[in-house]
Image 1: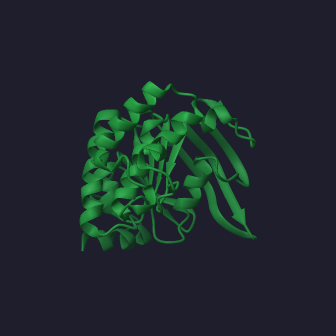
Image 2: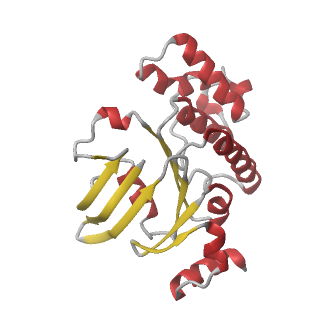
Length: 238
């Protein structure tokens, strides 16, 4: 579905990412994890075509992606960030906005919006102003908006980090159910290995802008890793 070859990204004469190779299979959720400053969110931005790498190649569904990314490709992806970027309109209209841009019929919009608000447990907030929501409610609306457009690839950049522990756990459970039923191809960035372990099929640990380890989350925890990776993972197993 998505592939990156030898991606390097430099900003202000500093190397943020170095020689990254990445692939994403249909129906797979790959988790990018690492400490602050490791480059995980930077890699997500490049994979989601929000930033252009200094060098390297990107492929989407087998086709090489040019620097000027075609709108047809951009419309096949959805992104949810740490902060819920909601418009100052009703919850329903926030979820519907991507569908309206794509020219979907009013009947289909109503069906999809209601369905995804129901899936994330916020259908009762449909007529409420989005800016009046709690942090957890707002993030559920953001996820409903992303899933409503039925993206070929979904990008989640630290979607739980601004939430308190009980809210985070409940949303993580609901998102896992959605992943199970939809098999949505996803890239998930988190600094919390619990997120990756619950949601991702495969994890990539980034340290200092490079891939330090890769594999199933349980394998990474159970098998001995190189020193820096072991020290990073120790935080989640102590």
